[in-house]
Length: 170
Image (cartoon, rainbow, N blue to C red; front, side, top):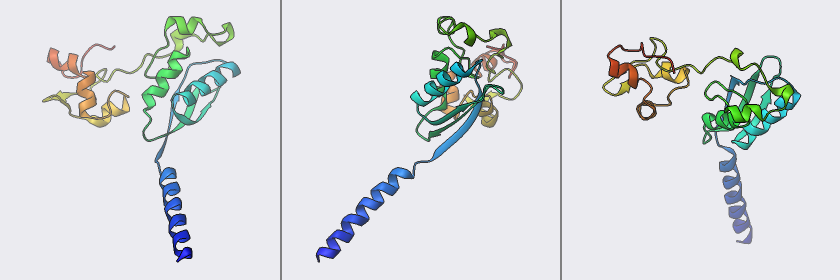
């Protein structure tokens, strides 16, 4: 009887531990403006503070590779990096954050492309308050789903003007 209790307790502990490790991990790569080794440390630190379990920025390609748990929003990772002074595809660092960087870290801001607008091309169109091509919106980093697209008003200007996806770039 005592052996059965020990076995049951061990089985319960093992199942709880396994459930904790079964969270889905996602990986993503995106450009982050920066210049040097100091930038690398700050970018990776900001990504980890925002919930990345892994972050590695390549100084030459300017690509940050991150891994994060499914419950973490990659936009929050990019926002935290922008708050640290570095432009990302979805967020531009504030002028104050950029000017707060060391002189050697201040990259050429004109060379950094503006984030793609969901309605910048013909890919994204709205019909009955929903994106007709959700994959294009996701690819542009605009929306996660129809509700998110409607909340953000991704194609609102295009729909309101009756011009489809020929809205002005943000």
